[in-house]
Image (cartoon, rainbow, N blue to C red):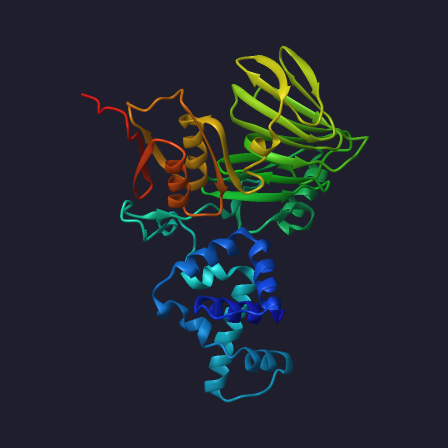
Length: 385
């Protein structure tokens, strides 16, 4: 256990009380905020709290005394033992995610809803969480709430042994539902960031000839170089072939698949031909046609960089991004133009209301939210008769 856990608890409590922090404490807080999107989410919620009772557990920690007892493992009476246990338990939970301690949530669908401070909305919705489930080749399901490293996971390693004995490639399925995101390290060391509402099929161990995965949704790949084993990403009728490179594949709709290249080179093929793209280019498969153009990497990789980056996007595209990130049921008003475009950007680790307020500032859009039901209208459009 790291002492930094107690330091952060103390700093958060003092920050909440609006006390002045030292330069070192400010730097420690900054590092903690940048280490995990959940930490930033927690901090924003913490600073918005008005009920001091919710901060009592932080303020009651005797930091130095608790740490001394942990490191020296002293004996103490039952009352002190209870205080120490509380402090230690909080510290352990903090080291994983302080967010869980403060809000006492399990992140199920109902607990995404929080009280809104904006009288316009009946509630607010928290951003997506790190989490997914893996359906093993055997059919067994396992939930994962932290980044998954395939070589180090015992259940996936066991599946790999079964593959070797059977002589066949068995596929596991990573399911990342709406309002979630995930990071996966494949057996060869390839890193994969998987966006909300996506599925990735992958083996526990790649063959000696090639490496192949199957995607539905969106993912960003940093492929481990292996000249002898090309890496393939298949999605519908589109196949991406690489040896070692960084690229994004967006395939929520198999009839429209976009591959954007950040580094290296990839070959994108469909049933009508193939193209090779260079860094800064994208290949788009649409209605059985394959075309190459310039990529806007800031836009295409915004989700992976924890941003909403709307640039000349129509409301359908914006609604899709909000839907998968916040798990919304979205209705577009009949008087809303589907051709008009909008531009704006904001971090993705914020509550839904913050994104909606940003969109209101850069458009004539209006939003009505009730639980996960979001109605989008145009403030200036005449009401339908």
